Length: 240
Length: 108
Image (cartoon, rainbow over all chains, first blue to last red; front, side):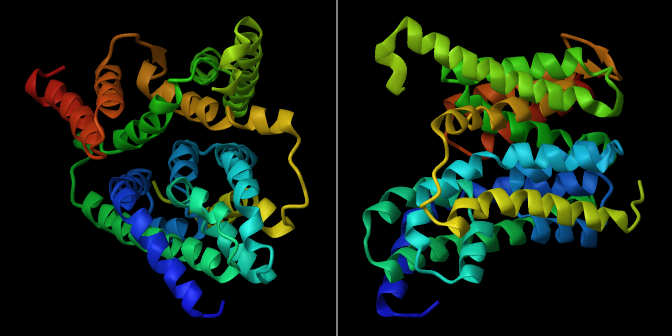
């Protein structure tokens, strides 16, 4: 990473574009911090997870499984499923990093987040200047990382002094609902979510919490089928 | 609950399950293309997974299906707040407010 003027300018512009959206990271990070302590982690374990994993939805999603003593493969598979959307994001911005070194590309991958992707993808793809592109991505990504760690720590420290009867762990469920809610404005996405939820409830008796994985697979299949059915019924909506 | 040192192995594996998908195409380069069927199916993974994880917490009370309970009421309020407000704090305040208000205020 060379601190060329183009890199610096890119970093400043990326930071400015992401700054308003980055406020949204704060409640997330705090809720994740609180949820990790509610699961029974010590502050060191909680911050260890926060640094090693650095993924809100994968952290929140695996906490109930870790807390219930679910088998390791199920925890890891669930995390992987929750992160699959990043394969698409990664493919969308890969072109910007093609001249970067391998360690730098791994770092950029590790730092990939929903917020930075949403605010920076458009200009990142339009630019042709490699240095500007790297700065434009790394600048807001490091800011996002810093906010995430700091406010998760605030959540971890605050949670320790709040009584258990306040059910703070429910904030993790609220957080997950907030991610799903706007997605369901698209009909096939709603079908996927409802199928996943109903499946998880209906199959809760399966051993090793296998019902969860089956429910997720059913949800993906149902969403995909609904998309096909919708496209067939009204071809004009296909672009939606 | 106390966790032994295997918790750290769990963290590292979850970390790999996070960084590998994120790094995938950035590391491999843009020459590799994702088949469009896979691309379209993957979009449904987060919604299906998150809904499947949340549903038991919201609909079950100590293992049994209860279509009307405190957490469901709180969840509905939080979702409405998320859909109709751009304030990132409001869903948490509204949801926890309903949960704790009903529990401590009305003694449910």
